[in-house]
Image (cartoon, rainbow, N blue to C red; front, side, top):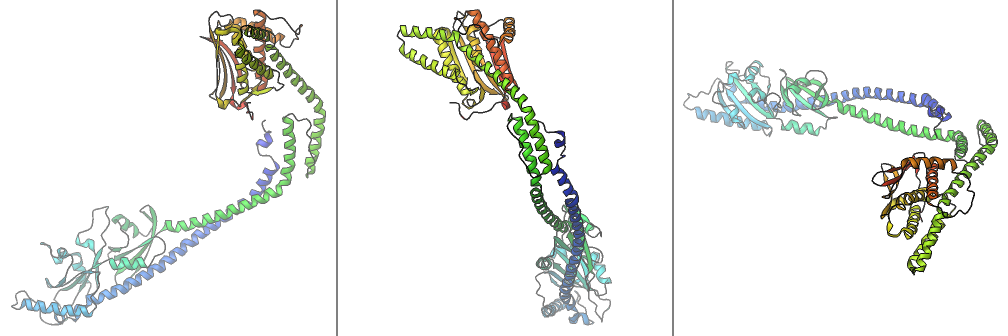
Length: 610
């Protein structure tokens, strides 16, 4: 049954209360939660910037302290006697080798005094007026290519113009940077410093130090920076000295651009500060998505709390709304019982006075309509009973007489086993026909048809053979009793009995495309469609007329034909009463086929088909 339009649109007390609750409570709660989350996100991002600023200052102090320690090494040559004397070492001197050896021995002593034990120092060169007076090299080919000119190196002019201050130059200055799109090599960088000889101002002296980034990597990893971040060091020329994360030239340019940028699938931002005693800048680049994830975690937590509050509110709503829904349920139960034909049901008293008044009006309506509905209901039951009686009468007169004649014949020829089997079949058949139940199962109907065909075969002998096919899972299906017998009887009377050759009667029951098919076929003489239509119309006119003689004599072929037409009419009428989506069709092709189709959703199940 379709619900009323008001219910379909949600115009119920419960729905209206729920709408009021949503408008007055839940919606403001959602808005407040959203505003608080936005406020938290703003404060959290500000706090994240402050924390990253603190981390950046710590890194700057560490870099300054570390480079101060390295600076003692670049300042050690000032204590060498060579750089405070009027002498110079020239390859043309007769004792040139001994002077170089003496320089290197004294330099080794000075470097030991300045704790030259750093494993991160890769190369150390003392250069004076075009000569390499001291060298401790790991990458020797960097400094001694066949066409290398010291004056053409990018750090050469910078070191001379720095007036003794350390100059920091990236590794890419040695022309070993990757191609465009590849990561910049920051595995080491150069510290270059000019050494002035106070006694020989024109003497050009340089200390060249190649420092690996291993120490930076180890220390910055131990610092455990907050969020997903990395550190960059740049010199006063904006060149990349060190990066704790591999970067391309494009990403490095974006990191120094002063605005948020995207790299490696994430959004990043950067903070910058300078190193106190050196011309370097520290850049801490942190992931904005990491900050956003903390906000997302807060939103998720707020959503969980909101969901818990919603569940609690729903429980309270259900509790305080129960007295209304209980009263409404009482009325709906009464109406549902009325729909099923229970005219004895009444609305019981409920807690809500308004519903009590409605229930009282419904009870009065039931009392007034009870008599009319009851009369029509009894008439319908009576009509069905008459129809079932008419169906039962189809199998009583001529069939029973012919069967008894067959029993007499079997007794005369001494076929006792066949006679006993025939008696059992007749007993089963009569028990089934005389049952007062209106419905049966497909399994019981199938067994009844088999007993019926066994008895018919006694009469026709080899002229009749039959087969019955019914899947086991279809046996519990519930159908009206004696639905198939008129179709089988029609096949025997119209098709097989007039035939002079052996015939087959086939009964098949199967489910296909959501339809139950009850199919009866025979390869007898067939039928005249116009004659069948005429007899069906006549059967419709005389279906419920009482017969003048309660026990008529054995009918001839015409009388049997009339009986069968009435049976087919009853089958159609009973199908209409039982299932809306059902049909009976009879057609003649190579065989005569009578088929009943019923929609699967209109078929129920019995607990057993015994």
